[in-house]
Amino acid sequence: MHSVNYWGVGVAMTLLEYSLLALSSLFVIVDPIAAVPAFLAMTARSTPEERVRMARLACAVAAGVLLTFALAGRWIFRMLGITLPAFQIAGGFLLFLVALDMLHARRSKVQETAEETAAGEAKDDIAITPLAVPMLAGPGAISTALILQGQATDFSQGVALCASIVAVCAASYVILRLSARGAAWLSPLAMTITVRLMGLLLAAVAVQFMINAAQTLGILTGSGG
Image (cartoon, one colour):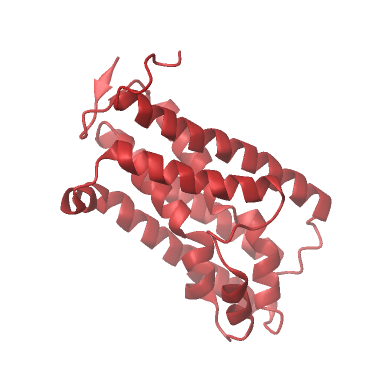
């Protein structure tokens, strides 16, 4: 069925389709696998137990930040007078920049800068910053949560978005917890291939966000399927 959401944007996604979109796009933009090297570098003087504690706190904080924006997205858009198509275009462009860096197997400066990583290395506890924000819940992840919230057409999809955020942050904790023991299981080649594949997926998601906005504004016609 073709339905219309809060912003008058026509969509035709089932709950399963929306859930898969939310889960995959959030996991790709949070990108916990690519955060592992920086996490280990910033906690070089910490014990495995301290690393696990910081990973747990960071993922909980990241989940809280993303859930806050997902739940308050409509109010934020109303307050600022922003339409969903405008945010889709801006967010899609931001995500595409991140995707380009991922395709080159490097961590994007949108997610964290070299200065933030260096500052983290000098800190005793990097859980809240820079690990939770902006490494996990950075501008790209927040933008994705807001766009997905804007595309939710009913309560069940809103619940699916919140569940996806919790699932992604839980998966991030598992990955960081495993790496806290030394990441001997993590092959650099496998990491590079995975990051590049995720970058390709993120690029497609970013372009789709912009296509959706263009169709809503009447710049493009057709449903794409």
